[in-house]
Length: 151
Image (cartoon, rainbow, N blue to C red; front, side, top):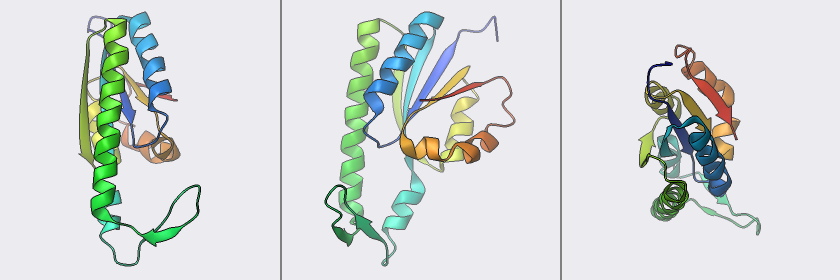
């Protein structure tokens, strides 16, 4: 990989921690003279669950319980993905690095393994992604040349 251009993939979910993770990823990309790729990863299983009639949602911090509304969930995820893309673009542009961003909906380990096959460093941000660390490590096991960072 020494002769290849360095590429860093930073993957986020719908959590609110994106800005700090993006800033850390941009600093690393500047230091490594690397292209930075942002990915907002949406777990398809979340939407499958939302279709089940018995699934309930407990809102924080009020602890109110309600049915999980799939359409509202879709809107909220879309808004968070757009905010993540805007924040990512702003930080990357300020640093004057090569960057791209995409939103992906799919099975998390499969999407990560596929995306990781084209990069040198994979950064996972977001509580939901970090909570699945073991599952993600297994999906990346065949890609021995990647560095995994959890922020």
